[in-house]
Image (cartoon, rainbow, N blue to C red):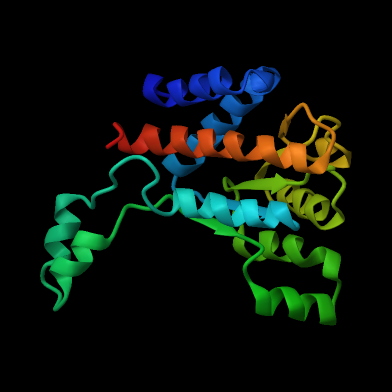
Length: 215
């Protein structure tokens, strides 16, 4: 991780000293995400309830500019300029870090719940969408969400690393995660309050690694 990216993690700990116990796991998780993107892989994210909303939030920060400019490379801009609406497209497209939220496929989720097994909804998507070298970020405040655990088990079998964001205990999910970020809280809403700055810092660090200085 470049110094500018590492500074994002340092800033997080300065603002939220309680997260100091998670510094190493946050840094390691960020390094693994950077490595995955460098190799052309993608990130998948899943969770339930408020954690489902966090999954969508993470996609929003990685698939478009967060705090760094993400202009298209000149050769791509030139190629787009040959299209009818090329100038407009080139002006508004931004470089993306490929990320999928597994909570957003309403048709698939409901069909799988009705036809097969509702607690296998994320696992099926990991199996169908994932490939070796990808990363699965699982978010569960208790660490005991069955559908999240099954997804992590499938990820492991498929050579996909799992980063788990949980509360202090880590729950059963800690046994299936390659990297555990267990923030030091026990109550659901307090865990969620700490998850947000953690994934914000990780997204900022990853973006900074690839796209440099802020605006």
